[in-house]
Length: 131
Image (cartoon, rainbow, N blue to C red; front, side, top):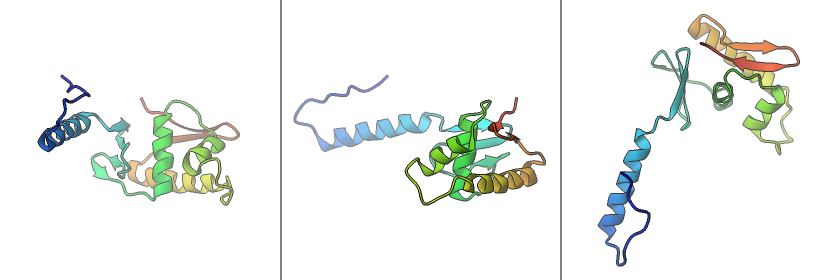
């Protein structure tokens, strides 16, 4: 059951705190991660986990992995990744930096998993898809 969004006046501060705590409990119950092939990626900015172990990544590589997993099964271009990670207004950074980040990410994933989960096709983009 959900609490009503309206409250009668005057409102006691304890009621506000109790409702805020109830909302917080409900939000914690919501699953905030996506899992694919032993890789668990969190939507709250935490480092991903591989087979239950924390897999520390630099911010850009983590965001690329999050983006690939959010779009799993679909091929995404270097430009799409760049826009998702850097934003379309960042003119200080070249698009080619995405290739460097993906290369480092793939090397780390290959070392940890024994396989490279990222499929790349020249001129078509990147894809992560495990059954």
